[in-house]
Length: 463
Ligand code: ADP
Ligand code: MG
Image 1 (cartoon, protein in one colour):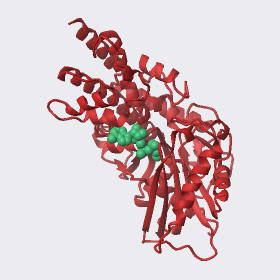
Image 2 (image 1 turned 180 degrees about the vertical axis):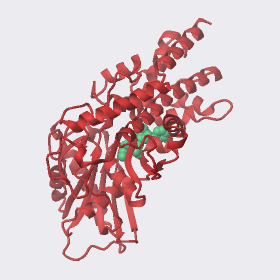
Image 3 (image 1 turned 120 degrees about the vertical axis):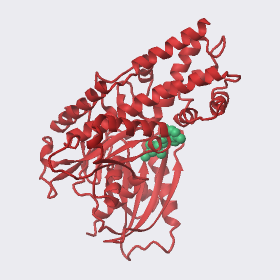
Image 4 (image 1 turned 90 degrees about the vertical axis):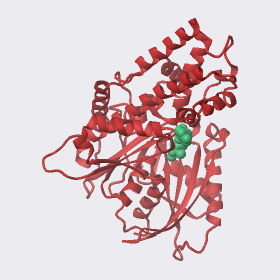
């Protein structure tokens, strides 16, 4: 019928516009490497902020003692403590708690957010068992993982550049987030020093390096997306400080804000961006990360409902609600292996209140999920190749047999198997069989929190 023809035409057009042939991905990877150079050359030289993290030494395994971490970055925050055993001993014990952030605090005031977090931190510290030993007379020390763009001024200070991922707290922008947190901690009557402020990518890199000495970069694919990697300090023209002894400096790329004419953008992406909390910003993030994939699918479904009456003569009202279709629902539909696509049926019914769908319609929805996830995953792979290019690990060097490990973390990477599989296959496709053998993707499970605790240890006031 005419409906089907129209619906099929819309999806065909989407597929074309979302296309990521290998040549395009190479252009994206090249553009990423070029922007990395530009962002390192001067402050504001690129959409990529290429933030100097002040981490010039990654964990070595000798870190010792009791340290805390607080990981704030998306829908939840985590508080953890780790007892580090020192050389050869690794992590002796660790404990964490996870708390969701009430939505009103994501768009309220800085004080309200930090007071809430500090109160949870104080509760956590109050419930400490015998396994955890703080030497007498010592102050507790914390690594603060904060996954928003911060202009760092030292290892434990930095001002918030802007919010991303659904957060919007105006009075916090431009403030030193460590000062804000410390003030709130003090209000709780808790005696704790913030020894390290790290982005989650930097934390993941540190946590990854602690377990594997070959880790040189970290990528987060969660609510948002970002990457960090080890740069040679003399290759950072905008760095005017002393060259660190190690010769290295970890760079927080803030790659979510990457933008390039080579990115395959559709009308759905343009309207999503325009109607977002941060129009014009975080374009790469809006194509590949968990906060947005489900929303892109919803927008396409909405258009098909309007123009091809896919779900009947009227557009189902729920389908018009922004962000109602979450990426975990999208991935559940995408992974549905039942012959009658029951999972798709149930999600359409329960989330979007669309009942009585035919198998044909459900198949259509799965195809749509596949198109959107595939584009995101392939672009993520191109981003990683861009980083490998910048550090010279994207091609074989004579006699070089060293493994290069990229630590990956984030709920999207962890749970959306079709996505991570596609990303890893694309990486192989881009690098070629031979080079691929020396590049390893390693899942760094919750490395960002532990990494922050490790960096708190290596920047302890008692060293
Ligand atoms: P954050 O990025 O908020 O720090 P996570 O790394 O845990 O936290 O990532 C959470 C995000 O991962 C969610 O917002 C969601 O987009 C994505 N996600 C979680 N579970 C799934 C899933 N089953 N399938 C696809 N995406 C998921
Ligand atoms: Mg996180």
